[in-house]
Length: 158
Image 1 (cartoon, helix red, strand yellow):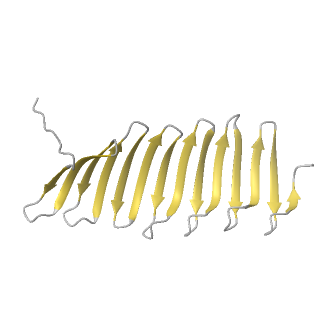
Image 2 (cartoon, rainbow, N blue to C red):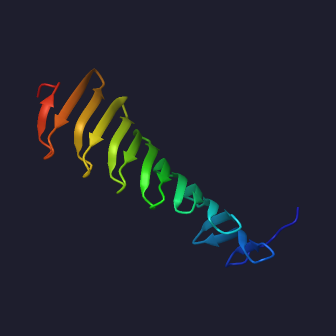
Image 3 (spheres, rainbow, N blue to C red):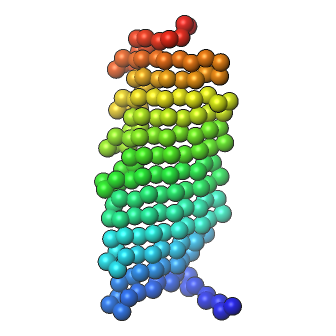
């Protein structure tokens, strides 16, 4: 097998007109492999580090990022304004899906935590629950809060 030693500042492959199309580099103990469209609008990047690996697929400012690290696995969908609109993640305690507004605030959340406790939340723009539907092992619960976060109705007796 032939070996290629990558220089400290990385290796860039370019087209005959000088447009970068592929880059391999080592940055702060992270290995990066990137592919670019001829005019740089689209990009695919793979990264490997001892504590995290990831894939970034992008076109202009829109992108999808897949990240796996010691704490969680995560998928992020990012819109043309650079804001996260959908977030999926799992941890050792469960997982969650967040659908966000245009300022990255989770508006709808669906999750499962350890012990098979499930929840669904409709949130205000500050992330506070307005409607909460929860499965609490033996029973279920629905809470409705006002805009100040005060409980106004519940199926659960306190």
